[in-house]
Length: 115
Image 1 (cartoon, rainbow, N blue to C red):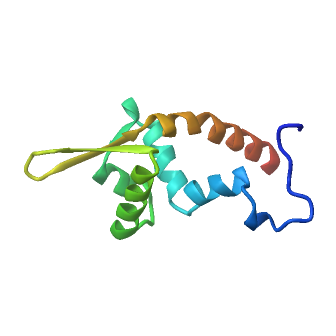
Image 2 (cartoon, rainbow, N blue to C red):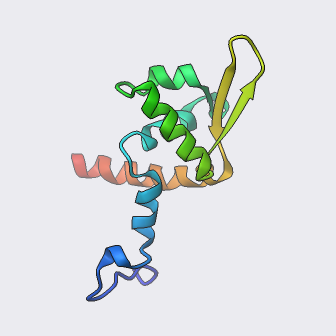
């Protein structure tokens, strides 16, 4: 693995580590399930209420917080329609789409390790 080098004798939390950077962005409990459900949806788009139903155990407050962070970090796109009641849809942004193959690889690795 020539492209990946861990810092020698340094505190990994004080260096620019790509893995830690990724975990900062997506490593929280709810972000990966949210991204996974959006990626798995038809047209990679889900409404807020659909996400609320699919991500079992998440509170509305936490779902809103995670969605805002994922939008701020460029993983998802929020689209609001002026209907009554308001309709909000979330879809994968390009950055989110490029993450999915990496998550699929991690999934396959983990599945093999669980056997």
